[in-house]
Image 1: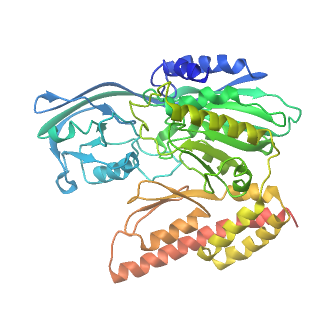
Image 2: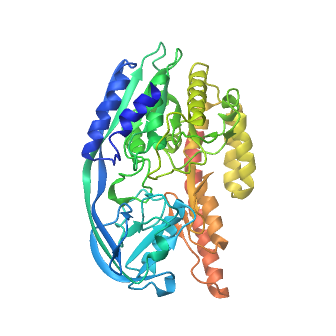
Image 3: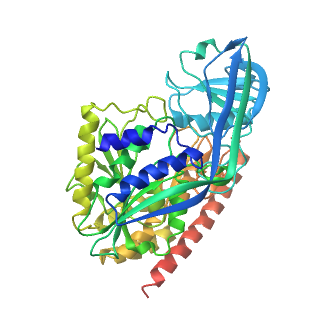
Length: 489
C-alpha cells in the first residue's frame, strides 16, 4: 500500500511549488489522508514559482542536453567557454563540482568575476540545485541571480569548448499559490499535538526526496497525542523575493500562522528516506529518549529541511533521513519496488515513529546543560554569567526555558566549505570565525563577513570592527536572555 501510494504521487512528475501540477498532487494527498484523519485542512500560501520553458545549449554547432538551474532568468547569450576565473570576464565558465552544495560558492564567484554564465556538472545524472546571489542564509529579499547557470552530464563536459550559445526561456511568478495539506487525528489529549511532516514539492520524480515520506504519513497514529500529518509545499523552492534561505519556506510560513505554538510538543520530520542507513538528527534533550528505540542519533539540528523551521520556533524536532543519498536532486530518484534495503528502512521508520508517539515524550534537560557547558568557553564572560542562571532554571526541569533556548540556534557557512553548521548563539561563533578566516563567512540573520585584505594596518582595524560587532551581538543576546529570566523574578 505504501509503495502504491508513492507511485500514485510520483506519476505527476516534477512538482514545483506554485505550479498547476501541484493542485493534482494536493488532491491525491488529501484523498489518502481522508482515510485515516478526523479533519483535513488545506492552507494556501504565496510562493515564488520558477519554471524552465525552453533551453537550447550548443557549442560549435553541436547541441547538448542540458537543464537550467532555478532561478536562472531568460537570456540569449553567445560567448567563449573557459575553465578559469581569471579568463572568465565576458565569457562563460564551466565548473565540475564535487558536491551540489558547492554550486553557490562557485556561482557567486562567477558573478563577481564578470562571467556571462556558468556550466556545472557533477556526474552523469541530471541534477538541480537553486542558485543564489547575495548574502547566504538570509531571509531578506535578495536580487535575482544575474547570470544563467546550466547543468550538463559529466560525459558531455569535456566536449563543451569553444563558442557556446545559451538560449533560455524561463517563467517566474512571485505571486503563485502553493498548498500545505494537514490531516488531524484526534486524541483524548487535544492540548498536546505532535506534527509529523514531509514535503511534496520535488525535483524530477522525487521518490526519496520526499514522496516516500509523504506516502508514509497515513501509517502513524497515537493513543496519547493529537497527531497532525502534514505535507508541506515550498521545501525545495518557492521562498519569495529570491531569499537565499531558499528552502523550507512552506514550513516557516505555516508556523508563522499558528497562534499557539505551545501545544506542539514535538515535530518529527521525514526527508530523503532511501536505501542507506537511517540517521536521526535532533536537539539536545531528545537524544536519550530516542535512543530507547534507535541508536544512530546525532545531537545537532538539521538545517536543510523543514524540521529546522520548528527548532527556530522553539519546538523540539526530530529529523529522520537516510544518508548519504546518491540520487539527491537527480533524475534517478526513482525507487525500485523490490529494493529490500528501502523496504527495511520503511519498516524501521514506521516502527520507530509509532513507538515514539505512543510513549510519554520525555525531555532530558541534562543534555542541554552539557551542551551549554561545552560551548561556554567560546562565549563572552557576560553571556556566560547569564547562561549559568539559565542552567539553574534547566536544573528545575523547566521546559519553557529549554524551548526558548532552541530559538538561539542558527546557521554559519564558510564559502570554502559546502555545508552550513548549526550552533547555539551562532552569531558570536560566526563572528569569531570571521576574525581569522581566509574566506567569506555567512551568518544566518546577520550577513556575510570577509577580511578582504591581509596587511598589518588593515588587520588591526578589521579586528577592531569584529570586536565591536561581537559586542553589539552579545548585548542583543543579553537583552533576550534577560527578558527570558525576568519571567521567573
